[in-house]
Image (cartoon, rainbow, N blue to C red; front, side, top):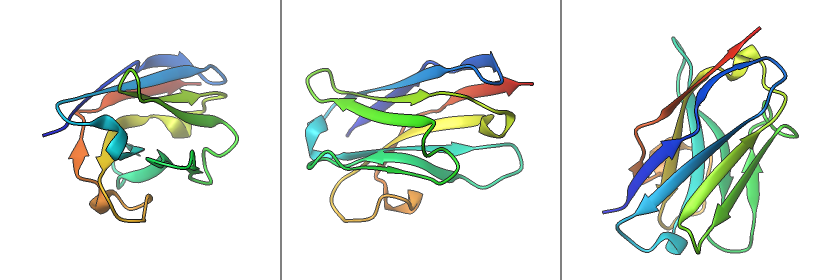
Length: 124
């Protein structure tokens, strides 16, 4: 089993920044690709960002590209999401996910483990 716990969510004003963190435990962390997803009220879960397990490749959705940055620290078994210039459309529950094997990063069904989520609310 791989356990994932998100933290760092909160309520911020539009234009502000927020940093989310995901702590992994239970299994070897560096053998997984890591991703961030979000789900807003009344909407489907959507891909936000991903970091490959090798090669330092990063992937972002069009809606967050240029504003969000995903990073990982294998020594500390953590993955982070730096979110800048937040707007009200970013309001959602954000989930950390881990994926073992495969090549895709944007489909949540491809991920094997999920955290409980952390709420991000952006007020105008």
